[in-house]
Each structure stands twice: as C-alpha cells, then as structure tokens.
Image (cartoon, rainbow, N blue to C red; front, side, top):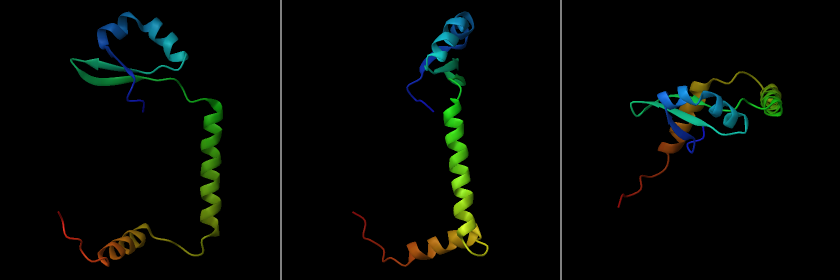
Length: 94
C-alpha cells in the first residue's frame, strides 16, 4: 500500500467524493481518517495487465511445485530452518 497516500478527513472525503474519485482514476491514493485514525483507503483498481501478471506468477508456482518430488510439509521446512540457525555458534553482542 502506498504510504504516501494523501490523508483526508472523513468529512472532507464525503464533501469532495467526486473530486477524489477523479484523482483516484488518475492513479492517486487517499487515506481516509476519522478523528485522526485511518478507517479506509481510496485506491485505484488493479490494471488488467497486472491481474494477468498475478495469474502468470501463480501458474509458475504450480509448475515449480509439480517438479518437486513427493510431499513437502511446511512444518518440516520450518524445523529444518530452525536447526540450521541453531547450528551456528552464538555471536557475542556488542
């Protein structure tokens, strides 16, 4: 999410909704605040080509997964990583 999105109060967003929608169509994003707390975001929709990119990524992951023999359990990978980290000598802090 764009942390540089313009902050707008809820009252201002309601008052200027048409204008904010036009700006959003141009690519701008807005963070809508109520009493200083973010409650909503107004962001441009995903472009169609970006949706296609996501589909390509998922297809690639499925192809890679198909090349890995047998079943892989996430828990086993996590434990293997922990054992790997613990195999290093502790570094002195400071």
